[in-house]
Image (cartoon, rainbow, N blue to C red):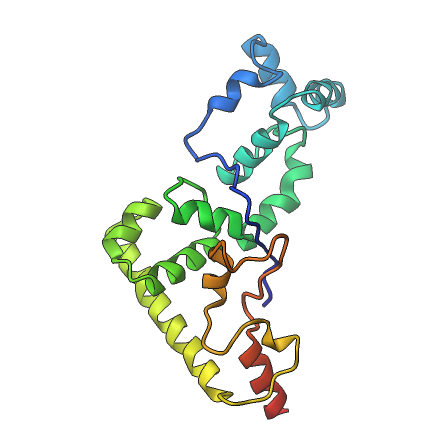
Length: 219
């Protein structure tokens, strides 16, 4: 399965899970609680209330933060970021497969970011290659120590499997496209290292150059 990844050298402007400071600038702030409940948690066929809520959201300066908060906290009910629960359903379905290296970098730097399973695994593999302990990973990701140990154990297996794939094609001729990553290089190291990252580049997370070459030989 392929993961679409994003990578940028810019500093990620991401909010932590517990950062609610955006609430103060919301267009709906100050509404009567009864009115807010009616508009932003409307009955299924209350089209007038939904339309009024969307008009408020349309001019809200923190609409994106509101939308991100709903995804990060699995808030499926109600109007968030100008979208109803039905309109947000495809986004909720896809968020578990998200792999955004801005979020990976932010979490690795200690930010309290809500990570998808794929993003959490990327952080864990990078931590393993950097020689982190399970205790340090548990602290960085706010995890139980036993869970962090399991993640590090899985990362060790993943890295060992990756190295075996690289070894299959030692000395093989690679075309220009496959030479983007040198044999033995860690694609996640390249993505997380600002000096190695290409602005706006898309990192190949699954299909490494050596694995592609090995599959071509097998064919």
